[in-house]
Image 1 (cartoon, helix red, strand yellow):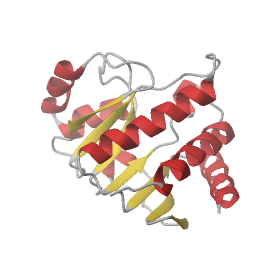
Image 2 (tube, helix red, strand yellow):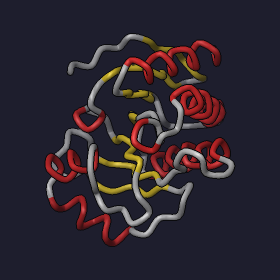
Image 3 (cartoon, one colour):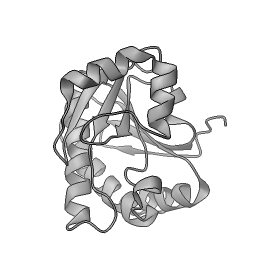
Image 4 (cartoon, rainbow, N blue to C red):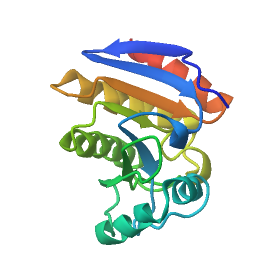
Length: 180
């Protein structure tokens, strides 16, 4: 799968782009991984991080775990193209206050990235897919939180929304259009 910039906009001083790609293959300062509280790299992108990043990533995570729901921590990215991984622990479908929890997770991910001086960050459709958060809800809440964060003073110059499939892409494209 090749990255294609199909949609972009400017929020304050930050370029926000929407692409369909494998987030673990991007050349960015950091990407966000939707993690478990124990930070064990399991299936899906967790496997990709383990295999491509090497054993040092999980070793570092053992020192950072556990992480409270709604919060995030930053690790090195091992042998991946990115320098860092922001491990965000967010809500799963049908939890109470899913929107508030997702918003907090997005904001804390951006704060942790900013604390590390990250300028280019990629974020997935957080909680969509495996965790069952509907793509349209995920896109709306994420973009509201991102827009709110980027309106303030930030060193983040580029934020890439990296989704896996067409339904996620369409949901984020609609949400991007709504915040313009």
